[in-house]
Image 1 (cartoon, one colour):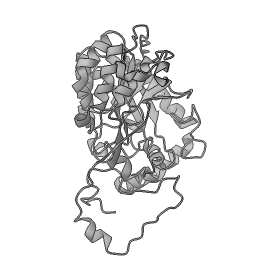
Image 2 (cartoon, rainbow, N blue to C red):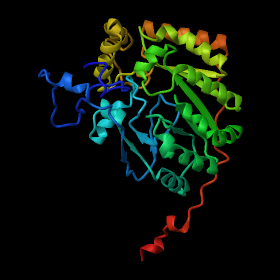
Image 3 (cartoon, rainbow, N blue to C red):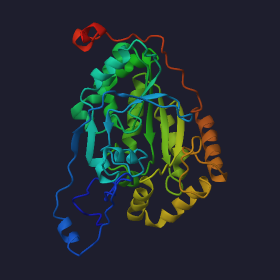
Length: 362
């Protein structure tokens, strides 16, 4: 596939593999005609699909993540990060984890109303909600749709604690909501940074904010009184792992007060998609990257078991962990975040049209 193709300009994936649930699979074949015609095609536009889900809060019992519920305003992500662990989730929509994941996005226009109903349920018990974990809640289409902001407005109204992770500068738009929540200990914010190398970032995270812009976001959040965690993720062996300390140092200088890291995860279709990206953009490192991943996952390129999937095991994983601990202590990024306050939560009041009593059935 030609990197200069107009069709895939600004996209990390240039293929659209069939998802693993399909009853059939296609195989591309070059008949000599496509490459010439390909350059005449316009860049792929983003297509929006309405998500008709009846709820917005998803619950989990995973022992290796620090929350039991989350909200994802969007499925798919226009940032188009080549390594995104959420790509396989697009298969549940009957779409491809490849180009479809970056260009065919679903959203919940009634997310705020659905959230209000869920929080108002008599049996709802307050616990921190993680916002935008599967895909970025402040990805480019949020600027025009505002789904994430509508969710934040409900959470702020109910004084419900929330933790967010983003790599987008658009989060600054919502400072009017975030600052009061932080003052009440209802907010954790993490900014993810994968690399400080602008060239790698440009091809690996084609529509995300640049690394320097993310550091600027940290400075602005900190100046507004919001504590920020830097999430070095994913840490990619033989490509970005040497930047661990540099990223943490830059984040500390930008005001971050804590740090975490996660190594590269390659579930399902992400493995061949990321391999394809490496072959096109970092061909000399492809086999080295995958060799080191096998060292960290017992001979496999990915181990999905809880406790293993995010950091791996073995000598190389331990070396990375030691480097992280030493740097965190040196930079003062080893502080534990305060527990978010759930005691202030107030259930929302629903309009009459939103409530139905049992008597309405008769």
